[in-house]
Amino acid sequence: MKNSLETKLGVFVAITILAAVLIIENFGGPELFKHGTHISAQFDTVQDLKVGDRVKMAGVEIGRVESIDLTTNKVSVTMRLSEKAVVRTDSQATVKFTGLMGQNFIAISFGSPDAARAAEGTIIAAAEQPDLSAIMAKLDAAASGVQNLTKSFTPDTINNLMGPLVDFVKQNSAPLTATIANIKNVSSEIAAGQGTIGKLIYDDTLYNSAIVTVSNLQETAASARMVINSVNAGQGSLGKLLTDETLYHETTASMTNLNQILQKINTGNGTLGKLVNDQEFYKNAKLSLQKLDKAADGLEDTGPLSVIGMMMGRLF
Image 1 (cartoon, rainbow, N blue to C red):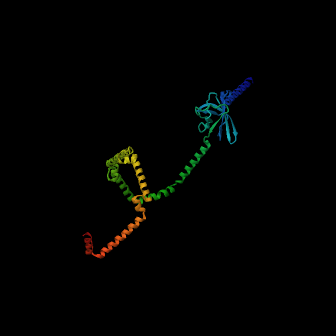
Image 2 (image 1 turned 60 degrees about the horizontal axis):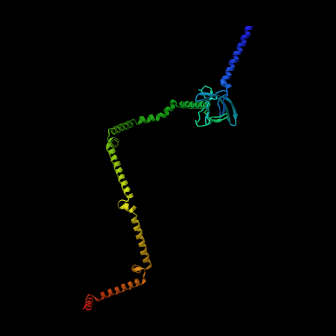
Image 3 (image 1 turned 45 degrees about the vertical axis):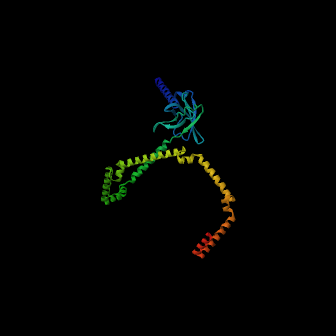
């Protein structure tokens, strides 16, 4: 009886110790009794994350999940980190999983080296990861679609699709054969450098002509550049016309003189001004022309001999 009681008591103690070890391991191991920094992040969903799950940085465990609480349209996850863990204020927390059947954990990024270290109670940003269930559902839907597509390709369907094409090939086998032969001949001639296309591809004449043309264009551009530089430097007739101020001043003086002359003519000064503006001169000129016209008419009526006689009389 005594041995039976001691055996039962030993089994009970062993089970208690094992349970304690399992509980401590699930809720943080030895770090459960150590001090650490508490930070939190707010997620849209934490999937199957549980209290006691690991918190990792670059695959290295730095803490455990201490609490999971629902807030306004968010899930607030509080994490207790070891004192050696360096988490920055711009670090991001992401709920991830280790394999398809593995346990979920929180991965925290390093953040910027210049950012401040996260203090007690800091809330860091959360990055959402696609839910595994949603991914599997999409894969299942894609697999179903592929399966339905393969089912649609029955022998009758394939025959309906390929039948017209097969009939077309059979009915036009001779023209298709001739066309393929012609294409083969054309490609052979091109490969041999025959014909226009063959010469364009294999003959160096076009290439050399293009090189010469480009060289001529470069020389022409260089000559034009030299002419422009000469003009800008005031060389040559065109350069002097564009850059020499003497021509500008002379032209300005000539225009001024011409303007003064026109003003004098308009005001009736000088001989030309009087010719243009004096009405008396116009009347005298008109009267003289009338007298000359009458004298010419009188000479026509007198005759040649009378005109000679009149001239001889006046001369002698």
